[in-house]
Amino acid sequence: MADPTQEIFRGLEGVLVATTKISKVDGLGGVLTYRGYDIHELAAESTFEETAWLLAEGELPTPSQYAAMTRTLAAHLAMPDTVLEVLRQLPRTAHPMAIMRTAISAYGCTDTSAEEITVEAWKRVATRLVAQIGTIGAAAWRLSQGAEPIAPDPSLGYAANFLYMLHGKRPTEAAARILDIALICHADHGIPASTFSGMVVGSSLTDLYSAITAAIGSLKGPLHGGANERVLVDLDRIGSAANVPAYMREVQSKKLKVMGLGHRVYKTWDPRAIIFKKIAETRAAKDPDIARTFATAVALEKACLDAYAEKQLYPNVDYYSGIVYRSLGIDAKMFTPIFAISRMAGWTARLIEYLPNNRIFRPRGKYEGYDLRAYTPLAKRRI
Image (cartoon, rainbow, N blue to C red):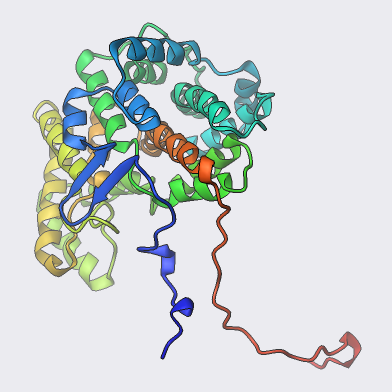
């Protein structure tokens, strides 16, 4: 009989590593809840600021708590000058995610209390990180384009402020609300690679900045946060809905992966994809270019569902989100940074939740190398 302790779960799929009260993913039912609240209801009724509080504190804020929280976020929007100077030294060719990763690491160097490892200290750091990650993201983009960063406007809401710092003009109320919904949808989602990376680093009881730097590095990859950028690359290459059949023949003959379809957990529609698809459809009605891309996405979605019915390749959150971001005038290189800006609320909540009963992660690998061998001195070895 096989030794169950030697069973390999590649990618740790299905392995339980922690308990949590933050979010629940029902892959069979296609349900996502934050602290018991359905993502559809939060997207329709909440704000990102309120959602961040909910993830961190466990309950929706009272009016006074909400007012105090928004004031605190506004007070911490600006980056330290030291961090901005570090970013100015980076090559313009650097990806905004790489710039953001460097910024968080540099930011940790400016915090004289970074080594205080307590729930209370990490909550203070988390608030500052949630506040500043949007400023950092917008600055990363503008610097990569050879433009000067724009100082935050504390009078604007979180989503509106990010669009303002990104584009240099105040967004419409509709645009700000769309981004607000997007940030809500991306705020937390179980323990994917980036969250787990942060938790692994945090479990060593290092500083919170180090853990978040690791999380950003993990999110950067095309199999995680970078997937929505890849989706648009593919849709642009296809060009139109009429070209989908030819593209599908290529996909099937070469066994290519269609980015944005399928999910490790969901075996039906990702509820976030439903939200993004509705927004994309609305935006497509007002813009011919977005309409063409949206029609291509819908046709590809149907073709894949028909061709791979047994694999349950339903759209995930990445599939339609890039179309929505493009409709807001956001470049594809900023899609993953927006994911990081939103997920900062979830990452920090998860790390703080794990801290009181912390145990360092120490998985094992199954050895499949040589048995014990005798050492041969260098002079006696032959080619």
